[in-house]
Length: 114
View 1: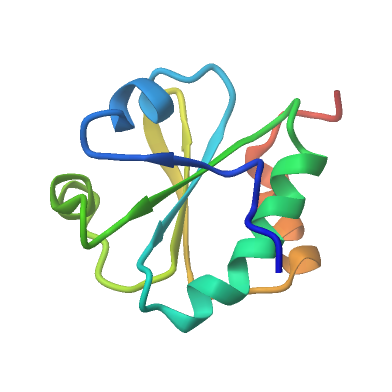
View 2 (view 1 turned 30 degrees about the horizontal axis):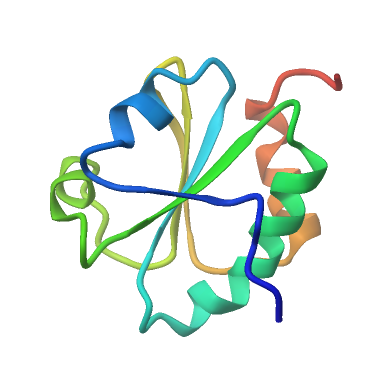
């Protein structure tokens, strides 16, 4: 299974610049290497990132290696998906889901088609 090439890794150090200061909405996956559902979600996020590249940025952050950001947003489960717009979290979802459902859940936070 190919790694999701459209999904950038962020860290505690790069989170603010890559997510909070980004003009586009940003979908952040809070993930961990040991998380089975996170591995299931990786190709889904890669596909969404590729298809929505003009409307949405997709990044992942490892909760084990980035405790500050994980604590700042009170993430308790992996995978947690959080959408940030204008530097603020506007939507949060927990658990893996198929691409079609994820796209439906993102419709209300994405700008109209580009």
